[in-house]
Length: 339
Image (cartoon, rainbow, N blue to C red; front, side, top):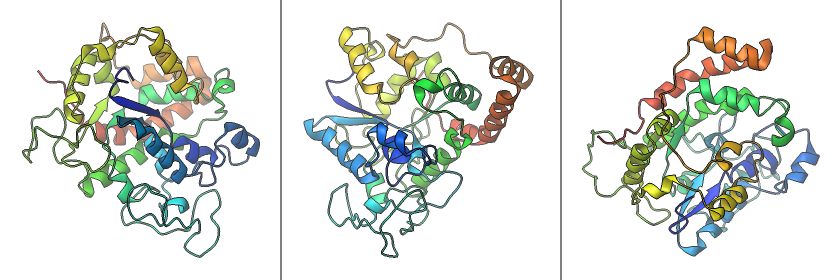
C-alpha cells in the first residue's frame, strides 16, 4: 500500500460473494437477509468480483490483491464446483458465454452446492483458466496466535463492530489454504522452487512471473511468508519477497506515517470494520525487540480461560489443535531472508 506509484491494491474483494451474494458459500448470514442487503453486496457474484478487479487494473499498474483463500473454497470439506456465474467462461475474466444456469438447466441459487460442473482436482469455485492469471503468495500465522485474535472479533464488545456474532471454526481456513496450495503445485502454477531458499532446480533466477504485468505468469516460485518471521525481520523478509515477485525493494515501503497514507489505509480497510484497527493505527513495520516466546499448552490454556472463559478457551484450543498440522506443513515452505 506504500507503493501506490506502481501498484493498485485491492482488499479482500472475494468476501463480497462468499458472504453476501447469490453464490455465497458461507452460512454466516444465511438466515439474515437484512444483513446481506445492508452490506451492499447482496448481488455480488464471483463474476462481478472479478470484473471489478479487472476495472482496478485500468490504470495499467500491477494489481496487488490481499484476500482470504477460503473465500474461494466450499467450507467443511465440501466438494467444489465452478460458480454458476463463471461456469462457461473459457478464458480470462471476460463476460462472454455466461450461463447463469446450473448443469441441470435450473437458475442457480444459494447457498452451496451449485450443481454446476466440477474441474478435476480444483478445490475452488474459480476456473483454472482464471486462477492461472494470479501470482500467488501465501501469508500464514500460527493458529495459537490467529485463532484467539479472530475469536475476539466474534464476541462482545467487538462483535457489534465486526458484525461477526458467532465464531465459526470453518473460517480458520488452514485446511482450505493447504488444499489450494497443493493444487497450484500439482498443476505447476507454483514451484518447484521455493522463494528465499537455495534450492533452485529450474534455473529461473532472474525472472519470477511477468514483472509489471497482470496475468500470463510463468516460472512462479513457491512463496509462503510466516507472520512471525515477518515481525522478527521486516526488512529482510520484505526484501526477499520483493525479489520473489520481481519488485524493487525500498526500505521506505515499511513506513506509512503521512496523512495521505493513513487516509488511504482507512478507506481501503473500511469494509471490514473492527478487524484491522491495529494496522490502521500503526505507522511503520519495525522488528520486534524480542522474539515471541512460545508458551506451553498449559500456559496458553490458562491465558485463554482468563481472557475468554472456560467455554471460549475450549473452542480456541480445539480449533488451534485442528489446524496446527496444516500450518506446520505450509511453514515448511516459508520464505527465508537472505543472509
